[in-house]
Structures are given as C-alpha cells and as structure tokens.
Image 1 (cartoon, rainbow, N blue to C red):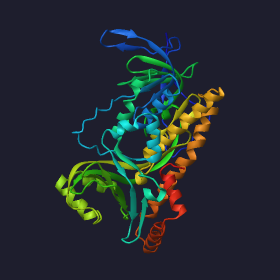
Image 2: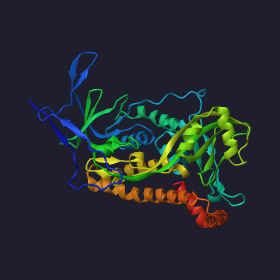
Image 3: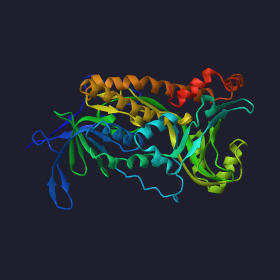
Image 4: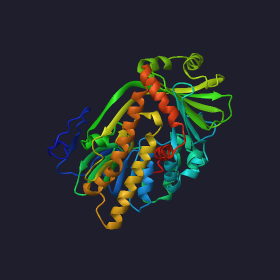
Length: 439
C-alpha cells in the first residue's frame, strides 16, 4: 500500500512576505484516514478518533481563556498543551514574566470565573503610570482621572494561566489534553483532522491556533507574517526593595531605550531594561552584585538604591503581524497572530481582546443559525481585531522610534509634548480609556 506526500496549500495565491511562512509537508495515507500511534507500554497500535466542535492548540493565557469562553457556549472543546502550569505556593519565588492586566482583561477573567482565583494568589493593583525623558517634563496617568479604582493589576503570567486552568473542571464539555503535542493536521470532510502524539485523533469543525509567536497552526495554514526585529533586547530583573508596596509604574526614555519599573507584591519590583542586544547579553553575564551596580548607574535617581537582585531574564524585541487571522475551519489569535513591542505592556491585553472578539463572533453566528466555522463568518472576527491590533502596534513603533535618538530639536519637541500631555483633558481621559480597553 503506497503513501504519498502532499503539500498543504490554501488557495492558489502566494503571499509576498517579509518573512516567508514555512510550508508544512503532511503525510497522508490514502486508504487509512486514522492516525496510528504505537503505545510503547502495550506494544500495540491504537486508534482513538473523537469529534469536537473546536480544538485549540496552546493552553497559555490566551488559549486557556478561549477554551473557557467557548465551552461556556455549550460547544465541545478540546485544548492541547504540552506543559501543565505548576501549582501555586506562596513560598515560590516571583517569576520574571509578568503582565500589566488592564481593566478590560480583568472583566474578561471575571466573566470566565478566574479573577477571584487570581486575586487569591499574588498580585498588586497599580493606580498610576508615569513617563518622562527630561526631568520636569513628565506625563502622569492616574485611575482617579477616569474615576476608576485602579488601572489594572500586575501579575505573573503563569498565575493568570493557572487561575484559568483551575476553572476547567467546571466544564464537562472541555477536554484537556496535557501533556500532548500535535503530530499532524490535515483537511477532512468534517473540517480538520488533528492527530496528537499520545495517539488521540480529533475531527473538528474549527481549529484555533493560540500556540504563540512561532505558531505551527499558522505555518500549516500557509498564513504569512510581516514584521522585523528591533535590533534590541529587553531584560527583566526582579528586585527586593526596602520600600513598601508601590502602586505606580514608571518609565524613563533614553536614546538607548526605556528604563522602567513595575510594582510587584510586597516590597518587590520588576525592572525592565531595553538596550542593544549585545549590551543585554553582557548584562546577563554579570553577577547579582555587579548587575545591581549597573542598574544604579543607568536607572533614574527615582529608583531607591537600597535593593537586591532576585532574578533576571531577557528576550529579543520583535514585531510580527499575520497577514490574515483565518481560513475555512481555522483561526489564529494572540501571539500567533501578532507580537508587539512590549513598551506599553499591551501584549496579553491585545490577546484577551482577540478572545472576546472570537467568542462574540461565534455567539452571534450561533444565534443566527450560521456555520461559525466558515471563512465568511470568521472574517468578522478579523474585521473586529485586525485594525485595532495594527493601530496599537504602529502607535508603539512611532513612540519607540520617536524617543530612540538624541537630536536636540526633537528632544525638546517631544519633551514639550510630554509636559503638555500631563494636563488632564477629555482627550487624555479617552486615550487612557482606550489603553485600558474601556472603549
């Protein structure tokens, strides 16, 4: 019985990309449709076909929220993830990967039943955001300007994921496949057939790619991306301070990149250091005491020098945007669709907006009796999200480029703009609401 290799191609048009989407070759047996996996414990070949309305690849913050939101609609959902989040223990050290969760993201987490669980773990509310370059030319945003209690919470990414995962048991129509990875994906009469490395095979009407910046789902679908590297990296440094818990996050611009502080629970903070990739690599090699001195030398005087370095990490700065978010029976969201300069901490908040839009799109289709897995319906999801994501990404690029030089006329102009922006006007209030996802 012969086997042939087919190259999946959606349509006949080729994408001219700055970054070419990888072409994925898929093995397909023309006689046996079922994926066959060998059970190493029993030494036998197994076949386990299941039908699901939706299969989601990626169980991080965005994927987990998508799974809960769609399960709440009564759909049969399977979530595939390779790694289970570690259980929370208050004695665990703070993770360097944190997010500033906006008010809109908090509202989504609350509707999904995860917000109270999250508040039962480590978190800190932040009420103010301040940014400047030259002393005396500062822009301040505060929750009181929009009559809000807070701007949001700063939390560890893994705790957001964990809080969402703890809701899974409340939905018998949500199947968690973990640890598991995708073995192959192929078109079928139902929609898409997804084979996992644990032997299970799902026939699904809709495949959701929430599998990160290097999304395999996106590559398999032939969806191209455009973007670039910023030739810079970002270093995250957790510190223990002698200050009481803070509630204002601040950022100073320098020609080499911003220097930022995010409050963490208790007498802790997260420092964010943007710089040339080579410089960040050098900083990562320093001892904690050497790094502390480098921080004191390069961060503004506003940072209390009485602190100790607890942990550090780094990642390169990149910009990626998928040229399309959907195909028939397939949609991508979160980092699989877009990665943004982390300057304003909007990454996961944009991902949660994607989740909201996908849930709303499918809800509306169900109410109208439409086939929610078809491209004609999924196009509505893209219309809701593509422009908003592009606007935020472009805005961050312009802001980043505008402060990445030391030309005196531009420096004076942008600092005058920061000082002017500190005046509390209706425009400033609307900008703040937009950043928080409240409009």
